[in-house]
Image (tube, rainbow, N blue to C red):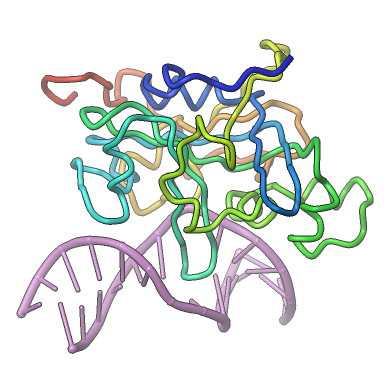
Length: 226
DNA sequence: GTGAAGATTAACT
DNA sequence: GTTAATCTTCACA
């Protein structure tokens, strides 16, 4: 029996939440029906010290204001003027964070997702590409700015634990598409399920190297930066 | 008011 | 591997 994730799940630090969201099930209900998919790829974005994050330096704007509420809300934004991406907020106003949902393994409502993505051929290799990327996920699940700030404890979009346990191996790399962010480009904050065909970019090794653990910024509720 | 840049994708060569 | 598509957001004046 699947259980909807509690508020407490999201209130922890963003890296922990990003790791633990793997294997969980993202659920989206609309008038057209219900869709489900296992989260197979995530990226963590931190608040104050992460140059790749939209709230680097605790930057509060109209776009980022949901980061400063309690974790467990939908952060939806437009990128490149074309694509929507879905983030899951973590922590609270003292420790803003978010987890980018990069890929899903669709389990329910596949016809509906194909429809929204304009995919007619339902051969396996096309299903692999249904949600293999942050903007593909939004297309398939009909996620746009209208969902900005939605509470994930509500009913239109939420995440549940399907009880898969830890029956998978976690892969770790640096994050994709943030080469502009200096040393943050090397933080090992992308997580994915190893050997899963639905992951977006396979064999990605990062721009150069991954940072050593002691180079990473720490997450604290108060105090100095690393 | 203006301008630069982007947590991407699909379609090219 | 390279590039166009496309427009909101935010810094700065």
